[in-house]
Amino acid sequence: LGTCVGKFTHSHKFHVKITFLDFMAPYAKYKVWVKPSQELSFLYGNNILKSGLARITENTPQYQGVIVFSINDLPLGFGVTARSTAQC
Image (tube, rainbow, N blue to C red; front, side, top):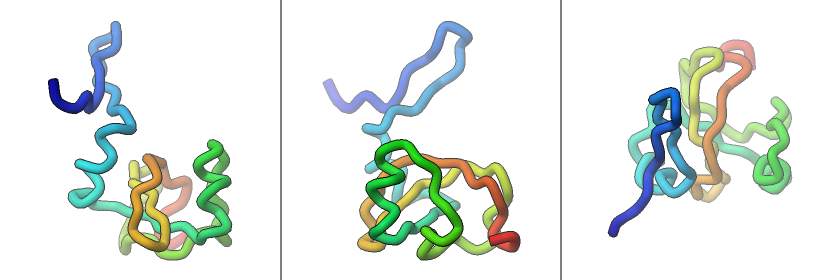
């Protein structure tokens, strides 16, 4: 009954599932938008290169969890930044 947003592991950590993406996307503090040529590559599990970034939220720190969007503001998935906004 309802939507499964995550689960607890055996070590008592909570892991968010991809079904929670639609609920979490409007409230995300840090967002990354990718170019159309990099969308499919990201969905297959590859990293997004600096040349594949369309936009990034200002003042995003390094190693910060982000939500990855397409150019059309469609949430694609979760990610972690390898560099800060200033370094990009």
